Length: 194
Image 1 (cartoon, one colour):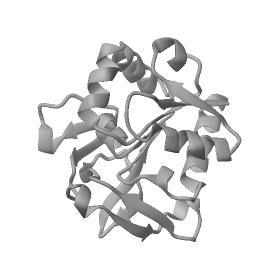
Image 2: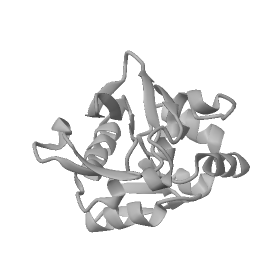
Image 3: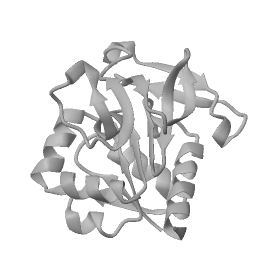
Image 4: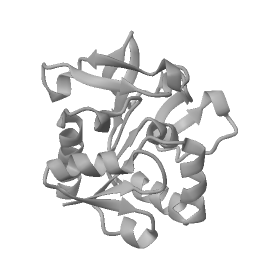
């Protein structure tokens, strides 16, 4: 199994380090050629408009959207969630991949100085709370019918899944807890069986 981390901008090294700890072959994806060699892709946190611009410049935008619509497993964290969403209500002019039926507000939890850590209950990965780090995190303001809510903070969804697409408002790669990445690896394994 080979996992790609979209290598445009953002928390790329942090995700690669988690997969290394899990003994999984993972590398940066910055080209169509590289994208075609992976079984699943992480879209990391960073600056969503920059990542979007680079996706379009490299020709990855259309190909990635097509692959996701055909069942390719993808996991977006923070800016990655914004890029996967159907609607960015705070910046309606911003394009996105439109593959996850949620609406989000960019920086919905405040600016960098308002970053915070919280222990979240994520039943799907076990009883132990997950230390979750929110940095200029997107706020989910709407979820579609097919979207499963995997975790909430103050009653608001912060981790969701719809079929082959999973996303979190927070940065699991900044925690020492590997369980969310393990969950994504199970998604990728399941997808390869179908």
